[in-house]
Structures are given as structure tokens and as C-alpha cells.
Amino acid sequence: MNAKVRSLVLAVFFASGAMAQPGGPLPPLFPSDNWWNVDVSAAPVDPKSGQFLDFIGRGTPLHPDFGAFADTPPETYGMIYLSVPGTQPLVPVTFVEFGDESDAGAPGRPPGYPIPDAAKTQPGYIEGGYPGNVDAGGDRHLLIVDRDRGLLFELYHTFWDSSASRWEAGSGAAFRLDENGRRPEGWTSADAAGLAILPGLVRWDEAFGPDPIRHAFRFTVRRTNGHVYPASHTAGSTQGAPPMGTRLRLKANKNINGYPPEVRKIFQAMKTYGLILADNGTDMYITGAHDPRWDNDVLNPAFASLTADDFEVLQLGWKPSTTAPCAPGNTRLCLGGSRFQVDVQWTLPNGETGAGRAVSLTTDTGLFWFFDSANVEMVIKVLNGCGANNRYWVFAGGLTNVRVRITVTDTLRQVTKQYTNPQGTAFQPIQDTNAFATCP
Image (tube, rainbow, N blue to C red):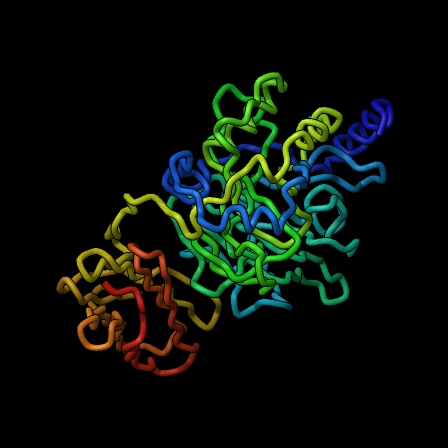
């Protein structure tokens, strides 16, 4: 697109007010020890690094899967994210593909996603650029940050069904940005790997800002095989392919001098924080945020000068050895010597939801109340059964018939189990003696 046409398109978009604000204000995107933000420069290389690179194709060039505008308005390159205030109204979303693995809303908040009403009919809110009521194909991700409450909402295959007067999506996930909330094992998110998307984007404001980029980037390959930490979801079983969650790191000895400063900053982040495989797509496509200020005449040749052979695959499932134990709080129990984290979410028939309030009883046992501290709703314990069947056990009982979702996480192994009591059903006791095969 030439400069004159690009300027005209920008003028039309901004004049109409339809364009989502690029680089809108954001709170910190997850703690510094989150898998997106951790330094991997000293992480070990996987023994099968070469085999995975052979599968991808060592000569495969990188490509920036982001930029400014396409030649056909309102099409855009890259992910679009929205920054909204805490007063933005929540609207319900109907999940039509992966409803069992989707979040109705954010923890502690009423159900719904803070989707601006303009997104129904105006361009510039959803990935691809088209309005919500135009199904132009593609993944149509919708990424929204409630900047006042520190919440991230992400949707996949987002569509406004005007005939049914409702928002629909294939899947959706909501994240608290002040904690490392990995999805339950086996669950997707708005991304195939079960990860959040926004923290893995190359963003213009970071590339041209005064500070180093301090996070990894999302990338894709054509096929995958299973998943490893930090991913939680499998979307392929091609033998020889890397699993979802695979980390790549630009080799330390790769010379990145001579590139424009913004490109050099991006490539340095690839050395320090690496890439995380998050979806099936085109080999070595690096995901970034749409921004009209990107210059793809600079980005495309710079990225293409790097190939898969300039990278190494890190040890599958790697995480820092200083993994923090569970941190107890008003809504969290830490059991089994603070190894196991227990969180409980309740939901009323009208859709209202909230976090259970935790009370520790012993090192292995605790209780939760929902509405009144004098009214115990649930008791749970995590026991060490390694000597009996090489497993950790989970037992729970309750005195409620509201919907309850219990999430137990082994913080040492980063493995999560989830238990759900259906709405309107007397609490069904949990006696899971095969809960965690993570001994010792």
C-alpha cells in the first residue's frame, strides 16, 4: 500500500472513531516469573533440538505476522487488542465450539466480556479488521484488557450473530494479570496451546520505547505433537513435530548488529526470552500487534534474514528451578507443605460468580465459605499417597448445591486438576486417589 493510500485509510478509520486504539494503556501483563516473562538465556537445550528444527526446516525464514493495513480495507495485519476501563459493561458470550473449556467471565466478576458495542458493526476491533457481524474467515481473536481491574479477556472465532442478537465465540478465557493462572490441564484458551495471547505479542510501543522488551513472543508451526509446560492443550499428533509449549531461543552468538534499533531490540528479546509455540499455522511466523505505525518494508526483510537454524530448542517443559511454592491468601489454600494450591470458584443460578474464602485447618486440610464466614460450604484435603500407590490424593466434601469449580495445582510440577459440582446438585464427594502422578 503506498503512502498516499495508507494515509487516506488512516484518516477514514480515525475520523469514524471505529479504529481500536493501538497500543492502548496496559497494566503489567502477568508477574515477572510468568512463563512469558522469564529469562531463558541460561536454559538447557533439548536433546532433540536438531530433530525439531529439521521438522520445521532449518532454512525456513522468520516472518512478522503483524504490521499495519492490508491493501483491502478494512483488513489489518496482526492482533488487535483493546484497553477498556473498569466501567465497560459486560455482555454475555455464547460458546459454540469449546464451551466446556471456556470461561463465562473473569474470577470474582459477573459473567460476561467487556466488548464495546461498536465492535458489532464497526471495523478495527477484531483480528482481521472486519466488524463483528461480518464473517470474513480467519481466527478472529478479540483481546480485551480491563486496565482498572487488571483482567485479560480473550476470545477465538468471535462473531456477532445479529439474527440471534448475541455474541458467539469458539472459545474464551479470562485471566487475572497479577497471578500466574495456568489453564486446567487439557483445556484450551482462545489459543490452541491454552496460553494467553496478548503477553506474547511484538508491540510497537515496546519496540520503539526506551526499555528492553522483557517477554517471549508467540510463534506458529504447521503441525504439532501433544503439549508440554507451559501449554495445557493439545492440537495435533504429528510424529516428529514439536509440542505446543515448545520454546525456541535465538542463539547467543547470532550477530544482530546492523539492524535498525527497533528490530535489534526484538531480536535481543528472542535471545533473552525466546519464542513459545502457541498455535498451528505457518512455520516460523512471529505474532505481533497490529499498529498503523509499523513499516513492513523494514520488518519483512529483517525477519526473513533469520532462519530456524539460527535458533535452538530449549528443554521441553523447562521452567526455572526457583518455582515459587503456593502463596496462601484470603481465597487460596496451600496444602501439602505449601506444594498444592487450592482455589474454588462458585456460581449461582443467575450467573453471579465469586471466589471461595479460604480457612486453613492443618497442613493437609482446609475449608471454604462462600457467603457467610459462619457457614462452611466445603472441606478439602490433599494427602501424600506416594507410599501406597505413587500418587497424591484429593478428598473433598461439601454442604452446597451451587455450581462449584475446584482447581488444585501442584506448584512444583505445574500440573493442575479440576473438579466441578453441577448447578442445582447436592455436592458430590471427591475421593480421587489417582489425582497427581507427580511423586515424590
